[in-house]
Length: 556
Image 1 (cartoon, rainbow, N blue to C red):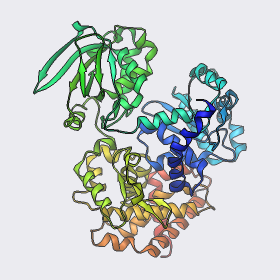
Image 2: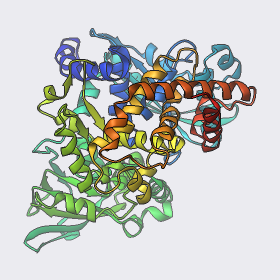
Image 3: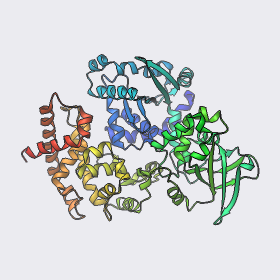
Image 4: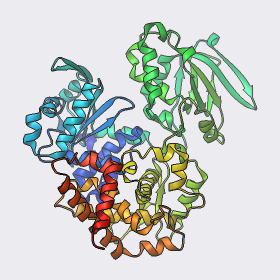
């Protein structure tokens, strides 16, 4: 990107940065950019807004050169974030990038961490230490609204992957830099237009595939070089997975696939050991080489494709690594069904799968039909694709009325008495059917769900004003659960008639929140010096029981 190319790109993205600033940070554009950019880069990690915001609290005095970090035990990756916001075209040099990429020694130095006097820096220290001990990859992500200088671009390419030795331990470090140009490309890839624009050419020999017609649809089934999928991904990135209900969710199957690719004796058997890839398309032409495909969309095999890309050095060097491809033409009206039916290689466990639940579609319509309509974001990209954003604008709060399905699920689970799981095990809501039905029971109405959401919003406001407690941002779900104990002691959502009445009692809700804050502060003071830290305290069901006991002991 040249300096002259920066203004129109910034103008394109500025409304989304400002929306994140208004919605989450009272208009602070620097924090709004950081949140929005992180949400784009980490879209495949299945994090809710709250789970994105909390680790970014590290930014500030004594932050050790980090703005945030994310632990992903399933992919054995610790992601470290640094963000630089500019509302003018600023070139990012290799000095900026090197300072960030070299911060690990500070993060691991106990004396530096203690001197930082930042409790969140201590959490980052423990996370980095544990990640290295367990042999995880450290992924450094630099986010900027500027543009890369030629030197910065060279540094990014050279340092994309390197190994650093600290205390005789080899640490793998990956560097990803997202300047404004790359963030725009990523944002555009997350949208779902009528035309996918994911055309590909597949270099397949005619003897390696067969074309037949089944139930009126042309189907190509064949053995293709795995590097063809790597090439397609490099061309279109995650846009290849727009019809996949999971997206590139990362679970244990990824490590199994990677292990097969790394084993010289097994990789030649990859075709036999892997379930392959199912894709749909608008049309394909196979009468000449290469096979051309219009609107190529992978509906099963997303994880296989992403892992092949991560092992690109192995895959591209070995044409014998092959993958089973099933390509179905012209299924515009059946794509959702195929995406769901063919996803059996791993459990359909993320909220993206539940986005096709008729209950969620009905709730979306209910929220939209309220006197003050709310955009219920069932699928990622719903907000970006919405053409009538103005109807959701709230003149009083100066933000749009929006609720994401996962954020609502977390708030409701906390309200029903499980704040620890709401905070740190939110995926279980969509993996565990009984828990899903607890949060979203049959025939539930939007007005019922607005009660826990209203309580959670009040808890969030109370935490923002709780300046005397450094761990206030961790306490939102715990406080929501304490109010739920008062309003829904049976741990079930109140009725359609009762829920709006309870939600309107703002004074009662605020009084319960104040009582909860006093209980938390008193218990933490009593635990000192055995207090385990904010993260461990608020994720623990055992500690919540102690908080609840302290809450009951508080005068009403």
